[in-house]
Length: 344
Image (tube, rainbow, N blue to C red):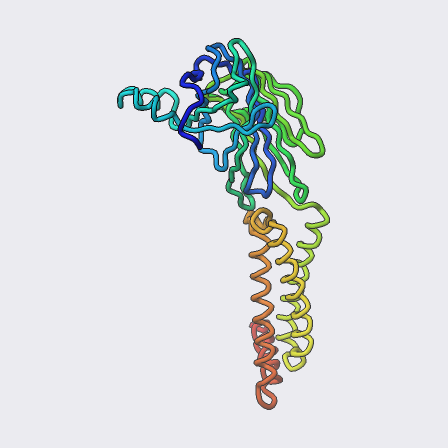
């Protein structure tokens, strides 16, 4: 970005009122989010072409657009202005406004007028951690504007379970409903909240400004029922096959080579194809299987069964190569130990 400011005068953040702040969260994947923030301000300061704006956090791939869609230049404080400030004044400025501030340059022919509204948009990308069994968290501060609107566009390949929670400055938590259920209107210390849901969006509206308050959107993912059927079927088939093969190895080791290798080959192929589908669809790190309180990724469960079934094939091959009646002797030994254990 250019280090020159179009106008030496810029509007101070203390002289504007943010009347509306709209957040749009559009997920590319469960981890990566395209974030759009639409800001409407009222200028109580002089007419100027530049605005010192507090972005509050580092925003990767940040781009800023005017209300007509024209992309705006932005940068840090120009060197000319910084050179006029002492080290102490610069330190005070950083303490007052924080490290994340930018000067936004508006067109010369379209300045921000005194006592006028202006809307501009910030677009950026962000990533949030995702793991099976744990909720992803989106934080929406309520200290920016008098009205804060937040919209989450749902991912088509998931069923998204969203819990909206208000966290106050004293770290008290208030639940605003789950996926629109028990949704509607809430009043918490004078701040009015509205929660709603459509087929494509989940929305939370906050009317009221509270410093150090935030809305936490807790997001959990599950597969659609038709997808869960395919993935769970693979686990059931692999489990039944594995334990059936153990029984076959114990009862009929001399006959197991052909049957076991054929069946295991089919099941392993099914598991590999389904595992590849999970990976290609970016579902492998997000959803999983809850086994007695342990939440395991489908891909890990699949890998365990693939290894176990492959080991069974190796055991069957080794038994098939044993000389003479050793496979039969192996079977008799298993039966003898079983009868002995039963007798004892």
